[in-house]
Amino acid sequence: MVEVKVARLGIDSSSSAFVVVLQELDGERALPIWIGRPEAESIAAHLNRVARSRPMTHDLAQHLITGLGGLLRRVQVTHVHEGTFYAELHLTKAGHPVIVDARPSDAIALAIRLDAPIFVADALLELADDVESTEHEAAPSDRDTLSADELQRHLAQLRPEDFGRFSI
Image 1: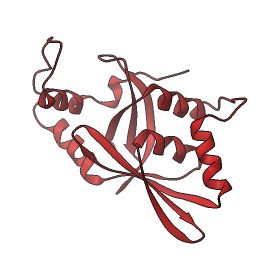
Image 2 (image 1 turned 30 degrees about the vertical axis):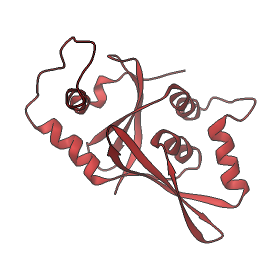
Image 3 (image 1 turned 90 degrees about the horizontal axis):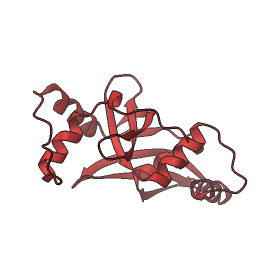
């Protein structure tokens, strides 16, 4: 596992989908993960210190963890399967470890609220790095649909610079 930080939150201009870019702390490799609008807004609100009058979902989860005596030790983005990333919350409760399956976007939103480190499986960063270092294949055609392989190649070629800064 490699420790990462939230390097950028942006919008993929080709699809108008939200993207969080995780970058390794001591290196250049980055991993873009496409996320939903509510999660992007939650991450952005916290990063920009936007005060809310009532707790939002990730704030509530934060209060539940701490209120029940838990501690978020770390978040791990573990693997990707059929284009879906998987993550885990590594908590402790009364000295006992508890691992909870989570979407990466939710895990990241909680990690930044609870000051927990975020880790990504080295294989995910290597895969992204390997794809970048190979010859660039042609961009997807202008068809309305892409095959899974075409989409994966297109997404793998995107770099953090391809995404603008997201602000609320």
